[in-house]
Image (cartoon, rainbow, N blue to C red; front, top):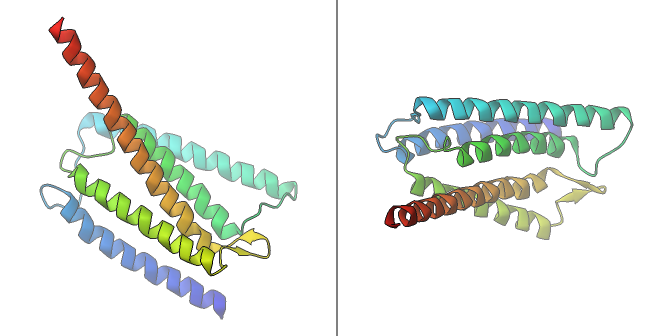
Length: 183
């Protein structure tokens, strides 16, 4: 019965998340549309990002199969492992797109995205801390489902750091261009 309740809870959570994501996405775009618009170059970059993400996920699944065949048990439940594989794939895509100027669309409000990333990251880290204080992160020596909040928070923190680094490089490039023009 616990498994059925957990599955129903996950489905309801995903449905709520999808509805909230649709509502939020219209507020994150300058033209109030739900869909982000990308130019041709950005679409190519995003396609490359998806390709790298796909092959990363495939390699991680193959690695997982090899570990399973060798009867090597990882210190985490399968649900956590599967989430980590998905999260790493998402991080590969997003960081590639950020560093190749394909993440933010031409109708996005990047500042509002930053604030959303900070909120989501801190919220998940907070939930992870609460779960840790309640002793729910590890069960029978393996990371349990509540640890996913830490990983989700870390994913958003890494994305935020990537954006800050990219902005720093853009600023540095602009400063170098200005110095070249002065000479």
